[in-house]
Length: 250
Image (cartoon, rainbow, N blue to C red; front, side, top):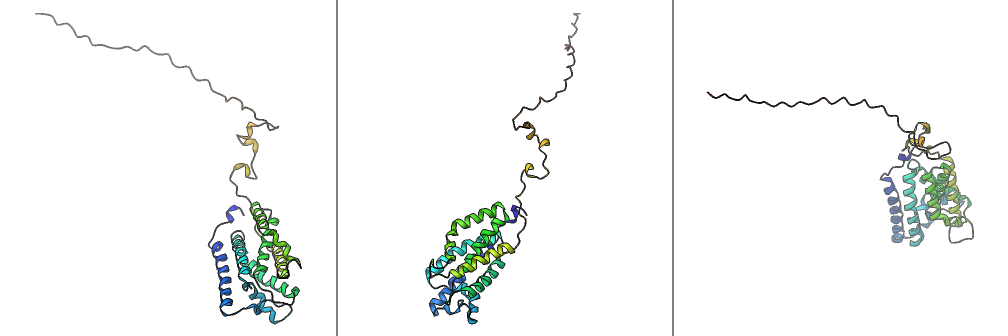
């Protein structure tokens, strides 16, 4: 698989746009008709299991929703462009697995918000890019860690008790598991030059022949020239002039 594998598609724009739009629509419903926090994850309670599906769409404040929306736009666009075959699997399975882990280890309180999914995306994109060792995906991993590396602090307890560190940790673990489990193609850089080909022979290349075994530039031997045949002798050129006969008088 070469560089042509990464192609822009409408999904790169539509997926983050509609996902964030859905979150804001749900928040409008909450503002208009009342909080839906009871549909969040409530750990180790059978009724609380419904929050595994519903909790990513629920937010407790406008600031909470705003921060998650910005992160989702960037991360979902990157996922759709660089991992388009896996995008929907990572999102769907990420919501379920991170939600189940939160339900198992979480404190006895309602856990809501898309933060768990955000940690899934950050973790998956970072670890998968490092594992592939492909320069574009490694660069993406480094960009993600520059933007969201500080989020790693919030997977630990007591850093901020107002946040669900359990949901963050669950998303981080789920993303790492997906990076290990899901396979990606063997990415190869697209061949543009002859010297990038595996069967390239430097000894047959005209440019490489200008260097000796120590890498020093050498002048090529003078080209062999064939002796030009001697020019034929120039034959004399005669010009002719018509001389009329003189008329005799009579």
